[in-house]
Length: 388
Image (cartoon, one colour):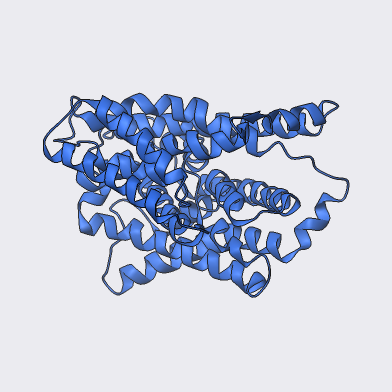
């Protein structure tokens, strides 16, 4: 099976990024519950231009993260796992189950209550954390399983973006939305005219972000739109899309996502924090991520294969898909992101974040242990035929 250098770079950056995310999350929680608790938490709420530092990270820097996700999705569609409908259908159907079942489980506990808006929280998979956990298993992980997890997580993020755009937009200012889409149309025209210089796209992206931000639709959507406006060409190393994607890997993995994790896990954990885990919102989040994700991914993928809509990738077994399904329960970044959009109450947001962190850690451990005991180590005498 062939693998592009850019996919390997994406996989490697996400792998290292996952380790960093875990480290900074632990540090942030420790500082938020240390003697400097007040100063530390207040720092992230410091006002800059009418908004807190956390707000700028969530609304501006995360747009760059979504730009990278969009570029990776575009590459997968044109040249990667999603370029062939037969290959794409398996992770696509699995991802559908991975967002429908967790949402249904969440609503089972929260439908008709003030917290039902959080149904999107357990839908998401954190690419960096999931790949980071998978990488701990070393060379015993088949290349096809790495590609499946990456494709699943990218599709998962795309679904999350669509959910954000449709269900977490409260008020729309049509004029600004139309202006943002007009800028997008101009960028698409530049693409058609074969303008390859990145500068007009980046400048246009900032303008598009500004109008989108003031339209009521979450501004991070701009990142994905911009990704599909940037010329892909033949996808080689000289293409505009490749150059930008290559450039963004390290800043996103080592700066943007860690900053997001630090800012959004500065949570003061009260003496009776565990009481919140018994509330319907927390139960829905944890059950959705820990149970809903693997059940949904495996059940939908298996059913799809059974009726001929897709097929299990060559070299994989269903127990491998169960392991990836468990890793799919690592929500973290996207789950926290959706929590911020779903709720306004600070106490509810913090209790949801704690539930997400605990569920993600549990899902990660279960996925790691399951795959550790079900994946056979590669023979050290066997010559590798894959690019790791």
